[in-house]
View 1 (cartoon, rainbow, N blue to C red):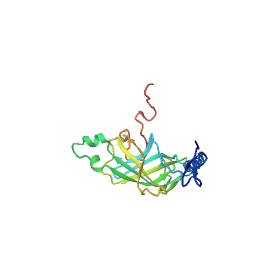
View 2: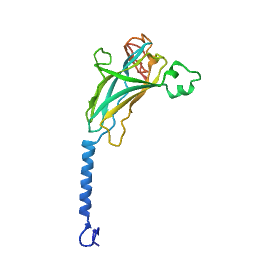
View 3: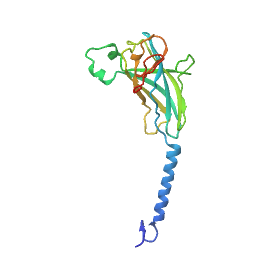
Length: 216
């Protein structure tokens, strides 16, 4: 039995095993090139254990040390960042009477600048930056909230770092996407809250000079 079937006629067009193998090899080559060299992914980041902040009655300023990872081969540009602060779901459900937090939150804090370190006076105002393909970018991103009705003393709060990146796929809209979400433990910041200081976000941190680790 012949290993070929006619496409148009029995004499002028055939699908043979060699033709099928050639087409599969071509598709595999194109797909591999796209996956290794051209593919665009989504940016990622990771929860910080320390941050710098001032929780004043006239302004809240938060500086988050972010490592932004681009796992795909194609480079991406970060054109916008913002910080969304909200109450945990359980606290939103349990609010019997309005509080300063429940009235003020959720709140979007805009990206104002980037600092040279988490606690530094050297800063540059917000500007787009690139994240190379399969690379990482370390940024100390400053967010601000002017005239806040709350000083965020009753942590933890759920904070979400949202990002706008470019270029985007042709079928996608230019919109904010979640880069990172974690609990901001502002309840650990009990001293000089209105001053801009480096603060811990680690629940295992017990003091300025010691750490208590479970199991030790």
